[in-house]
Length: 299
Image 1 (tube, one colour):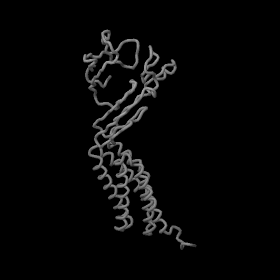
Image 2 (cartoon, rainbow, N blue to C red):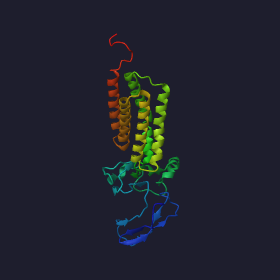
Image 3 (cartoon, rainbow, N blue to C red):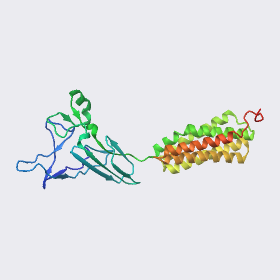
Image 4 (cartoon, rainbow, N blue to C red):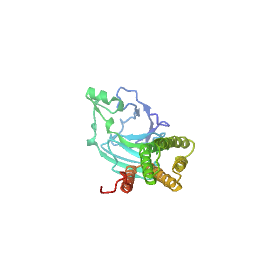
């Protein structure tokens, strides 16, 4: 009811009727709008009817197949629909800024009959448990339709980025430890902690900048600042510009990889899994070239 912007008018057999709230004792739905036309002069039970609903934006739009044969065609200018309910559409098309879907449902696969008397059936979502206790059937679980999902906003993107924090920090430490073995320059445990703290602060920077600008710009600022800081810190420790540049490049690749994943929606899991597999393969290939034991291979 809260979604209606004006009073609907039902056209019944070329006559218009304004709907009114139903205050009778028979509550088929939790809220009813009804008309009471005089059908005494009608000689047929087949009466065409139609109505238009002017409704506000809402989170979802649900339907019930009350007809003996129900066909629903729905389309809209929304690029992130989620088809929900008991039945998925027979046909669907989702574009970047629009969608369309259609259902064709017969009456025999629903949980309530075509006709009934009195209150043997109640189609309300808030009385399913009461209906079960009273031995009544309920049709609320037969609803189907579409939910309008919000696109991924900056807070969701920051949250998704933070989920990769442990992975990025761990891979960075592995790369840093490999650099330590290759260059024969000892890096103190405290330095590892400081680098880890800088990478944790990165996510705070990302969230703070994303509240004042777009996520893409905030990601670039936070990433460049963190990569630059860690690169300068490593250069100060090892005094090797080449090593600092390599470590900065490795960390930059990690951030680019995470940015690529969070931009995806349907293929994020596949792309992330393949990317991680490639990274692990590269690390394994490089690790077998490092002599960790200090002994000659084969001894």
